Length: 280
Length: 121
Picture 1 (cartoon, rainbow over the protein chains, first blue to last red):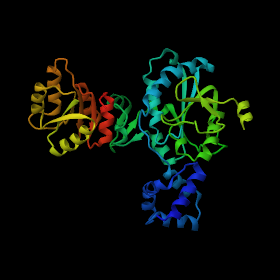
Picture 2 (cartoon, rainbow over the protein chains, first blue to last red):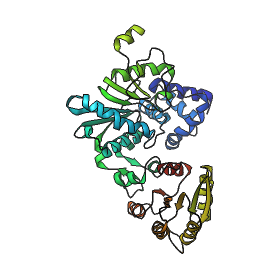
Picture 3 (cartoon, rainbow over the protein chains, first blue to last red):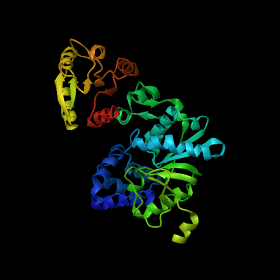
Picture 4 (cartoon, rainbow over the protein chains, first blue to last red):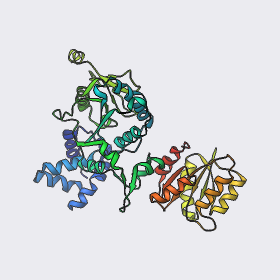
């Protein structure tokens, strides 16, 4: 792949999703586009980009951008914090909620393992405060293909064996004739999957008690992170929290709309709007 | 150092699994069938057993049932590892005393994940 091609593709990803792809990851670009190149009969990414330039096609561009996204995820990733969320934070939110309704948003959910992990924990939870509570889970991603897989709750041989215990496998999944494993209908019905772009300022989903936006910001260009944090802060209920990935931090962000929360280690809450305006 | 017994009639599977499990800081011993594995356990009980299902002499399920009858409270964690990977077989392995189940083929990621599930990685 020529350097100019890499830069065109990286610019496209940056513009549409805020994703930063360093030159050192050029090999990933080729690997992630391989199936599109094969399907469309292009020998190299250079041919693909030449075609896009000659015949602009927003739908095809969106597919390419989605394919370039980092999609690494697995069941019960960072399970201690998920456990803490369900056992400590959620009961508190339920107690303070109107009519026992709590809304959770899994942003950048990729193929859905995080949302289903949460749904499994809620199903298993024997916590009095959660009995009878209405806990809605909304899960979003920019990639339609990943969402189709998530919505169907379909996982392959390696995905189903990463992070998931055999007991949870037997309790929540069914093996299909194709060899895939499918999440139970009960869990699939608990989650509302939607296509959503975090960097689109118009794309607001309402107010949430808990937002999981894990291992998304660290793949974004620094210039976009502030606006995304602002968007997350604006969509938090008063007292709500945002959970980032285990190793993600916002310490380098200036005038960030999110600040460390006292509710839970590693969680963030929204900076008061007045303080945000003053800081700006 | 923790000890893991790999029980599989395929020398290739034993070799691949050995390499991965040694990298996980286990001392590894091997057995080619259930009877050989039972003898090995009677000599020295391992901390973990990676166990194939279909083997000559004594299969994995018969070995597991025999082990659970006679391990006298020394309960090694048993991870079944088989191509018999429908829910019915997996359920039977769990009911017979398996702590985890790996569907073949496997890689180091799956082995790490499953050993983590049983608190050994």
